[in-house]
Length: 88
Image (cartoon, rainbow, N blue to C red; front, side, top):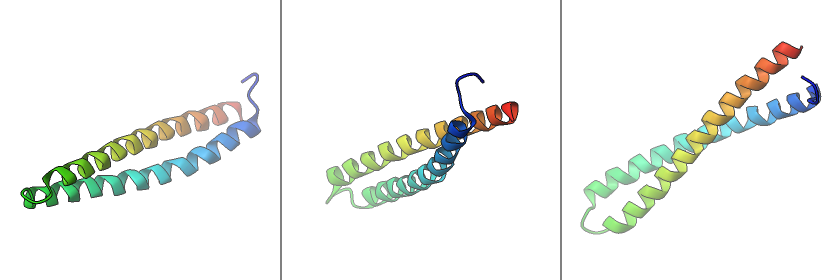
């Protein structure tokens, strides 16, 4: 590939291989927290309904973003590995 150094591709691969497990961990944790918050919201609907709903929504948004980052980084990792195999 003209204009792209192998060193830069390997550096990008290292960063992506760091981002994938971290974002996966954040996504799994946020998903679990959202699920736990929604279950507690169902049992405590009288006392903390609006507060728990806000927390649940924030955890769900964080989980969605983290899953998207994880998926995008995984796709980029596959592409970078493919380019490195093709070039190398």
